[in-house]
Image 1 (cartoon, rainbow, N blue to C red):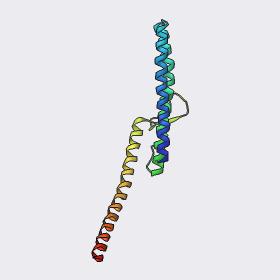
Image 2 (image 1 turned 180 degrees about the vertical axis):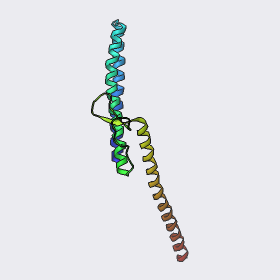
Image 3 (image 1 turned 135 degrees about the vertical axis):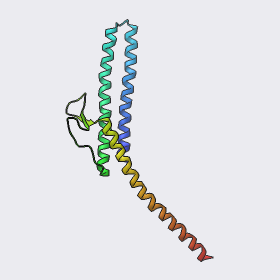
Image 4 (image 1 turned 30 degrees about the horizontal axis):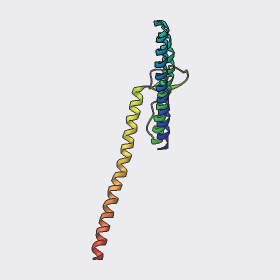
Length: 147
């Protein structure tokens, strides 16, 4: 649970970073347009913000991939084997020697994790239902005996 909260907090921070990039780009483009910037200057300005946005997106993908791999390891769900060519892992487009799961592999891993979590919950619900039934029967028996 704490890992999930930490993951969501870090995800939120990256989304705030992306929102800040978008706001800064809008302000910079508005200022450049007001100064009469030509199309090439606006293109260069957009490209600089695109580069920063790509770094933030890469960080978000890496964070998500790392979280689900850790969760899969904790639940003993098999993680896709690491292969640099043609496998489930791909190298970051922004930073070299950093890998994350491909979107399809991440989707499959999340599905496997959800299935494992569902199976574990079903085990608990069976025991909880049985325990509730026993408690109900005992309370009924005690009520009959006391009368």
